[in-house]
Image (tube, rainbow, N blue to C red; front, side):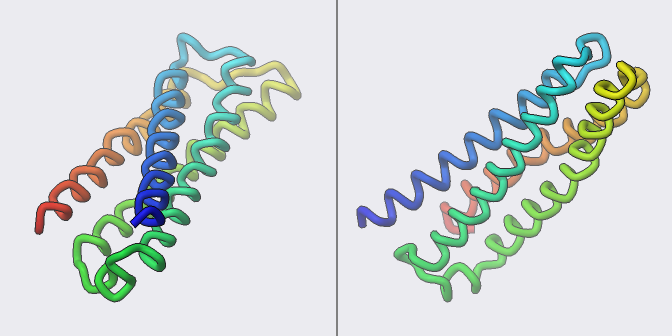
Length: 148
């Protein structure tokens, strides 16, 4: 029982870390606030969010393998597959902003150039899409926990 609580706590901690750093990206990715220091910070936030997402997946895998319900139970649940698929889609959505932030950093360091407002707006849409889709995973978890 203690192992289950520790695993669940680590999973929740990873999820909350992802939410915090994804929200920070969404807050900072605005053309009116963008400067060289913000570009550097966006790259750092993206890296931390990527690690947090990986930890969400790993701690989830640990729950599946060593949790009290067991892998057979999880793998037989359609809601588990839906959550996992949605999370992988969210991870895929993060690739474009991460690449954009790194390109912006290269431009900023090499030539002192910042991206235009239209480009920032396009990348911000991707970040906002992730930020708004992530709570759907949590809602699925709540319904799943209540027998759906």
